[in-house]
Image (cartoon, rainbow, N blue to C red; front, side, top):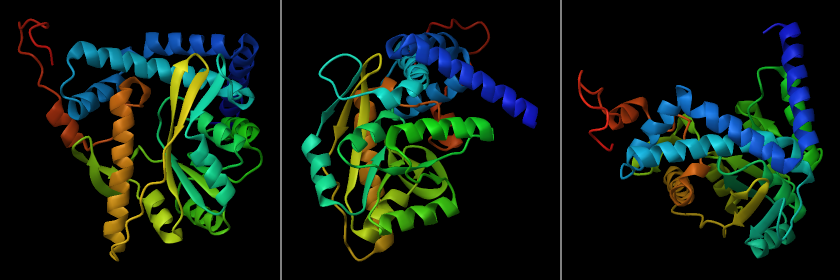
Length: 314
């Protein structure tokens, strides 16, 4: 993309953010949800979500899968449209903002100090989690994937900086991983979204199928002997969320480092699976989480010519 195109796209992004800010968080959420819900299910990537659902939750019929996929798009559109409002969200009893379950856990971790790792996934509005953690004194750094447009990337970084201040964030890759290790060594908290496929990760179970999974969170927690905590953000209403912080996961210590990493990564996946089964429309099923051959096995062949499209429920 040329520099002129980069500037044009960044200009459109700034204009969109200005409109979303102007209409307020609830209206912005509703607009984002409506647009994504109308367009998203028609896009080819929704077939990935359907294949994932067939594989992971084969008990669902076609209508249930369609409802979940529509909900996935609704949540994604809302999450994007709420982004400029995240820095202003506050803890509240009702209305715009967030509430928390497990406050004693996050307060205890903040009082303890030292390195800690919070893991989550692309679930609900995951951008709210650093904000809530910061409210209890846990200003966590995180990994991010830089946008291809450097001007848009700077806009995103500025918005995230408005949430937790000027703390380091690490680009995905070897250099970012090394910087994150230094950050932990110096006692800094680190947040990692661990739910996406990593081709050079390790194969561990996820919804009953082996899935290539990033082992970094487990490896780092075991190396530093630090708490590994799972936390999620549920959407309760437009621009209203519930953050749930779970107790630290037990750290295995068998003397076999690779086996311990695999066991702890499996435990993390089990937590993610529990969350997703409870609220499947909250998760980003659009990502190719399992190998293509597993997806293909879960996708039925095309119906023969002349067959009625409504004959089966799967």
